[in-house]
Amino acid sequence: MNIYNLSESNMPYVARFMSEIQPGWWSYEGALGQLSNVETMVGTVGWLIGEDELHPKGWALCRELKGYKAIELECCGYDDNGTFALEHKLGLLFDAISDYAKSKEYLTFRTSMGSQQFNIHYRELGNIGDEINNLISIDRIDYNWLLDYGFKVIGIQPNAYGDKFHCILLAKDLR
Image 1: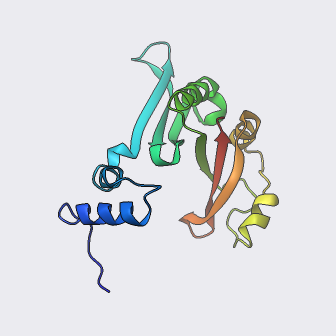
Image 2: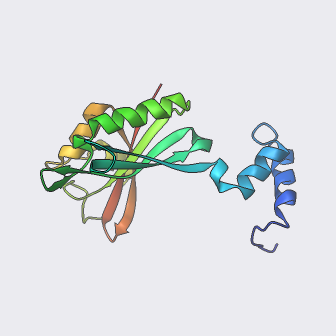
């Protein structure tokens, strides 16, 4: 077996293969679109909050993961009287994101955060399921706000930001 880069010239062959091996998931046209046009599967959408559009007080940027029927928070921030704040100050934007995602028939709203101020920060992880069950935040207002908003921890990505600096994955069901 040899390995080849996916290219414009071989995409039609891969699309035909995809549709033949798993026709319940892909038509030929759907497979070709997924292989050749990333914009059909992933998009970017964002919002700002402020007194007017020229004076933002906060923002949220999201990725639309169309194939997964999900929207994912990429980054956000809020000016809390000169201090940078995260999710817990952006309830109105989170409502707008949720409403937008529901209008697109997305099923999940996803986000993530670093492991700072959690009991898993800067240590080796054991079984991820056990780590999730025993996860404790140490005064993470944004984390507690996300839980109150309906998010649940769905995973931990070890060493995402460096050695023993992990990523906590959260999701909210939009149904």
